[in-house]
Length: 106
Ligand SMILES: [Zn+2]
Image 1 (cartoon, protein in one colour):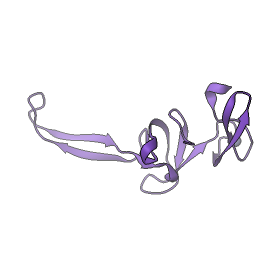
Image 2 (spheres, protein in one colour):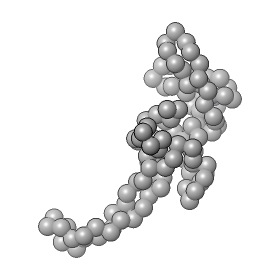
Image 3 (cartoon, helix red, strand yellow):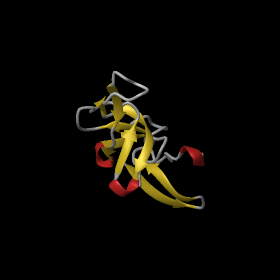
């Protein structure tokens, strides 16, 4: 899994192309991620006891990981991620500036 919760990503395809957002959830078994503000669909809900009129709610749907690129915190560019082994374990590194994109390891 190259993208993790908390990463900021750029969407590179689809209706939200060129938008950025924070990853709020990853679905590793489906290779999908849920990104804040991205791929929002309106859903009509039936009236319930608490909401007698029903209505329309916004749902953030997952997008495929392949549709997103991580924004490197060091060079602020949308980059592909490489992997490097270090004494701290497996690090995700930016292919452009070689800095680690794992904030928690800094
Ligand atoms: Zn970088």
